[in-house]
Amino acid sequence: MEEQYNIRSIERALNILKCFNENRTEIGLLEFAEMLSLNKSTVFRILTNLNNCGFVDVNAEGKYILGSEIIRLGNIRHENDLLKAEAIKILNELQTLTNETVILIRYNNYKATCIDKIESSNDLKIVSEIGRNIPMLKGASGKVIAAHLSESELERCFAIQQNLFNYRDDLNILKDEFKTIRENGYCLTTSEVDAGVTAFAVPIFGAAGSVIGSVSIAGPNFRFNDEVIISIKDRVLNRIYKLSQKMGYKQVQA
Image (cartoon, rainbow, N blue to C red; front, top):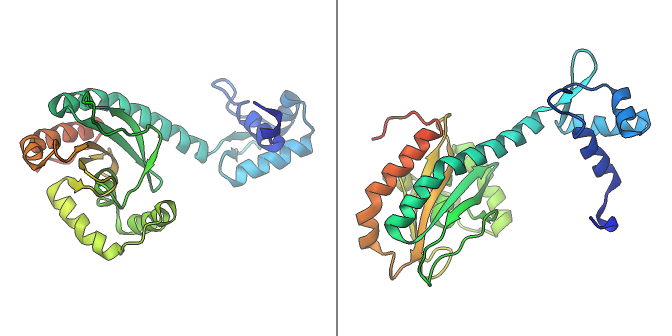
């Protein structure tokens, strides 16, 4: 990494976190100072900041342990990996069924992110970038997630999405649409994000019964039309329901 991008305090904080491992789960202040060749006051200041942010905690013996924020971030990584592993077979099945692009979206912390995709083999196809955040208030992939958020979560999501995507529509109008999405079990949009593109999306639910993501199929609307969608709808709903079951979802399918 080039020297001008190094921020010493951040580098030291990360090195402190890297001191933890499977055999070293609690570390004292003096141990940190010796391991990193830093004075105790410097280490203490960094640990205090890490503690304030939830990245480390102090146990009853006065030693430092990894905090809840580290555990939360680790769980996100684990759940993303688990979702991708469980979804890949179904994504392939849906791409074979439709020969359109199939996209896997993960929802976390008021944002929806593409974590996997299988593209159409057609020359004219929809392309989605892995790692890209998608709008949650426009387009099938995000709307089908937003429709299943709690009232308080939706309001918070709405505020964040307004800033991210300069969204200006009325939340109350969206709520009426979200009610229809929940009743149908899917979201269908045409030319809502990109002109000439139709997308069909189904929510994924997790063990707690809350929405954790979505699977969407997207293609040009002259090819991926109402007739095609009607013919595949039930099979897609069934496959994504099975994916939710693999993620721990227990509710009986209607």
